Image (cartoon, helix red, strand yellow):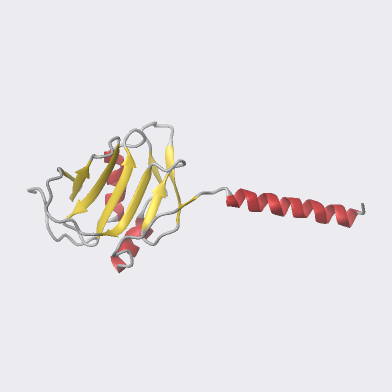
Length: 159
């Protein structure tokens, strides 16, 4: 085999290896929320963190690609799912927790997975996470910072 053929073969293998490495990063399949194209969701999305600290202090959950507008996910395997533009919740029997100026409706039906939906902000945002991997305080703090400009339209708890 000539030098140029060997070099071409080596470059082809390197190219294939690089393609395989790039192909290893997961893309999470999600559905966009009904109001995902709201311009305010775009503002939230650009401010979401690249990583969120896990319960294990040595671990950070890195953001991974999603295939739906106004969605995000963190971890491998994914431990946090986020969506902007979900249906605005009405008054509810779900418990409500205030954290850093946001009221969150807490659905623990799937515990240790929690679904928390912001109340009194439009567009509404929702996060679904595994509490055995990451704390609600960490998730809500990081998401709240990204969504701080969403207009306040109501509240479920006294301020």
